[in-house]
Image (tube, rainbow, N blue to C red):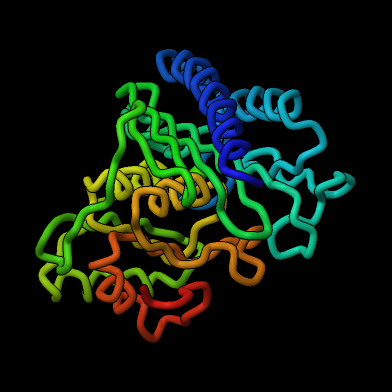
Length: 282
Ligand code: IPD
Ligand code: CA
């Protein structure tokens, strides 16, 4: 897919994310009326998440008919699609990766730390991403071959080379042993760093792209939480672990992201925890 086509798709994706953001924001303002279900420990879903994902899927199907969509709430519609294979499956058709509301717990608690996240990957990797924050009014767009932007203005990753230079966002995945997360926090703090947890991995990766955080670490994220943000970090000149290595597309992966200078130090946080998906050092 050439750059012109990627940019065309990015513009369409931005429009869809903004429309989804209007719907999500409407629900955010009357969240006390939402029906909420528990999917697992510290894992909630509401009718807002589902309605926003339905909207995004309808718009993607109209704009890109027949292309595969993986979403947090609606699952993987790959089976039966023309472009069923996608990354890691031997095919190569584009795959859309959607989180209608990332940061659901914050959303339901009334904390303005959530976003709409839509990414696209192909067999050559993550291609583009849009992370839209309708409360603050920021839309992050970009991709490895496209650059990265916040509300149309170019953004760059932080030039930090040590943990003392800023904040690292650490996501907590209850899908991995707690000891791994505790080990990472201990390593970061002992190395003079400090962590932050915003509750939205996708928005945090956009903040890494914008140089607000010097890095991001989470032991396991699903691709709907990571794809768009990884596209932004790479577009902003940063380094990310390979989230699509092996069966990462459908099973998720460890996610580490930062500017190029901090990448070697970020990688040390995961030492001994398994190297899957870490790729080559920059
Ligand atoms: C979660 C958030 C959180 C991250 C978790 C995700 P959700 O997504 O991105 O920051 O640490 O791994 O599951 O459930 O709010 O959509
Ligand atoms: Ca999510």
